[in-house]
Amino acid sequence: MTRTNLRSVSIALDHDKPALSRGQKGFNSLIKQIDKRRKQLRAWETVTPTFQQRYVSEFLPLECTSTTLQIRMVHFLDQAYVQKELTKAERRKMGIVITHLAGNLIDEDEDEGKELKAIYDKYSPTDYDSQMAAEVDGMKSMLETVLGVELGDDLDLSSPEELLQRAQAHIQQGQVEAAEKQAERDVQRAKRKKSPRQQAAEARAQEQQAQMSLSMREVYRRKLASTLHPDRETDPQERHRKTRLMQRVNEAYQKNNLLQLLELQLELEHIDQHALSSMSDERLKHYNTILKEQVRELDQEILHVECAFRYTYGIDPIEPVSPDTVLRNLAVDLKELRLNVRTLEHDLAAFEDIKNLKRWLKDIQVMRAASTFDAMRF
Image (cartoon, rainbow, N blue to C red; front, side):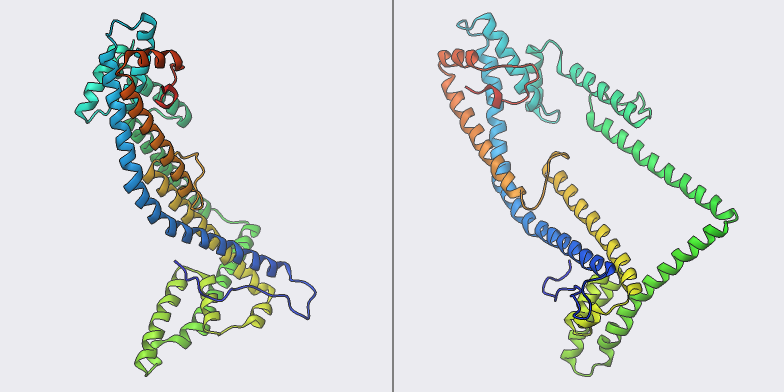
């Protein structure tokens, strides 16, 4: 991660000119964009350990407690189902509640999951395995239609994970094949005789790339490397300082990080504000091209950090996520979990009296599509 205590790189308005040029404005704009993205990455670095600590120490224990209480509720309702005080209508409603609760708690790898599946099958018109197979088969058809591929008939239809892995493999294979075809087209295109216009365009692109490399090398070699080279220093402490600085310079150069090289120049006072303001339009053009690439690279890094965060903590891909909101959202989730736990504890105690259970069944609104206990509280 880049350092934060460097002098700001920007082009100030020159007294001899009424306004900044287009290239100068573009340079300043790109510097601001890079600074904004750096701050966002630093914010992720700061917030992630705090989030992880609260998630592990608070959220996971509460979630485990909630799951345990929901399992108790399933078993309690299963046992209460046969009580003679309940009407047929109340039993039908209780059966729906049981299947919704049990269906969300079943875990194939747990002994408890097998018991919950047996309870689910007792009250559901379709057994759990058949229902899951039908859902996965529907998912398979949808994925085949969207992806335009055949996922095969050798899948374990009770395993959504295998289906998704097979779909992911097809996507990756398609990407590889597309890249190979594009490479073949590029080879064939290269073999064909180029028109004067194509040759001129390639020449311009190569010249621009050469100029960008030259700009980077000029900052690196003439302005920094030549001055900081530690072998030229006789004082041990100064040699150590220059060695560390040179490591930063080399890292920035290897990553084509023009902004960090310019920041290091400013930090070492090898360039001043006048030098920035008097850069030629041609030089600014090359600098701006390099800075645009740095913006794209930072965007990719931010995307990678956000995707990894979502995956680690099970956050929905379409849910907005940012370092400014994740702790606040976690606090909301914790509040809801605590309320859920208190409600489950209250209901389990209250339902010992059959009158409270009958009143609860009368008050709740049960829908076939319901998937959480929250909508069925006493």
